[in-house]
Image 1 (spheres, rainbow over the protein chains, first blue to last red):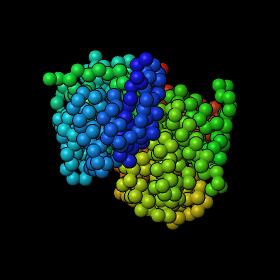
Image 2 (cartoon, chains in turn blue, purple):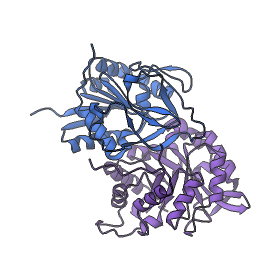
Image 3 (tube, each protein chain N blue to C red):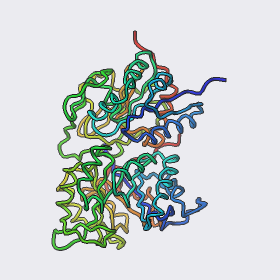
Image 4 (cartoon, chains in turn green, cyan):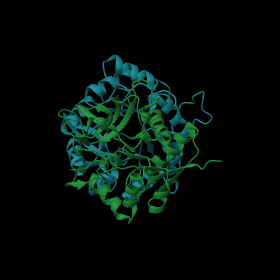
Length: 219
Length: 256
């Protein structure tokens, strides 16, 4: 019998951890994948996990600081990702994948994808962008986008967004006063600006795709 | 394009839905989790639980309701009523709420808004503003379910909570609530003109065109309780009415 897939949802006191963990478990169940989900800030559990999910809510700087607050946690994430473990960042968790964030001062991110997190400049529109917005799929063949149906929508809540990221990193965008990165991916790391755990079947599909994902890591 | 949000609100008392139509499919019309599942399947864009439990002893029932709902339903969930502290918020968020709405406690101690935004992020801080008209173009904030006048100007209060870090305002017209005569559009226009935050309109819906009116007055979320509970119309009918008026709505996603 094969071992269940272990999914580590990173706990750094930020974000709706319970919702993320439940959505991962439900996605696995719907997809027929045997999985065990742990909410953890323990480095050894992160290192042992087959998938890492990093939620995030609030400010970039606070989330970055929260990760540093538990000794060894950030190193465990960085090492696992370097070793090829598939990683999914959600909302601020996705933003942390960039080179730096400009919210509450300049804070370095993981630097896995190009670009920075800057305040959205959307004259005439409300901020935060709050609600369902349509995903414009740039790479429809991407493994994370399979089975989403026509006109998939994600639930967004954010006032900051990724900018200046290379085009080949952009898997999907959305339109809010211009093109806004919605799903990014490079090698074995992916991120969604919207809340997959709150995006009904569209989100659960993406999570299930992430659990099945066997990314090719470029040399 | 960002879509308008159609938000059914469930009034919950001692863990049970207070009003509620007995949908054919429901085993127990009083179970908020079953009601929430019906709205989820019907294409609701978010759900709001308003906890109107009066006694302190029964407060814990809402955590159980939120937790059981969040296990089944992967939609944004706002919980309001009785949120007094960041401790209350943390318990609700851990149970599975995505946003917490505060009203009386924020008016009593406005710094609570700042503290909540700092601790959990603005995205989960909703300030519920219950407003009653006091004169032409003037509204006053009420608390304690509309019983207590505060002397605060509602539009000034909207501006203040925006500055303090709220992520959204749930604006209820006490004059219209329960009347089915439509949202207070003057109030909505004044508030949406004063702050950049998203505003959810609440109080007074009785006809499909009222949703259209609310959206055209600047609300990006449209909340209603009794018209849904009593089966007067479905979420799908509301979305069709909005779409027919040329307003953006989200199509229902496919089954998994």
